[in-house]
Length: 88
Image (tube, rainbow, N blue to C red; front, side, top):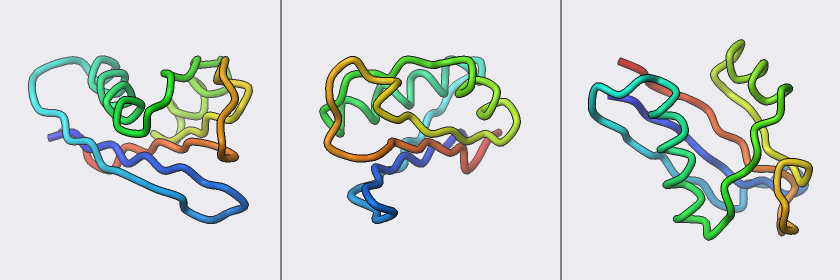
C-alpha cells in the first residue's frame, strides 16, 4: 500500500489536509503523480509544476512543498506540502 499525505498551509496553520491511498503494482513515480492529481482534484487546484528543487527534495526526504512558483494560477495559501507516509 502507498499513502501520500497532502496539506495546505497558510501562516504555519493547517487549512486542510487529506491522505490518498494508492494500490497496485505501478512504479513509485506513477503512484506519486497519481496521488498528487487526486489531491488537486479534491482541493480544486491545478496540478503543480515539479521544479528541480522539488525533485531533489522529494528524492531525499519523500517530502516536498509547492509554493506559488509551482502554480500558474494564484493560490490562496502559502504552500501545498506532500509527504509519503507509507510505501510497500
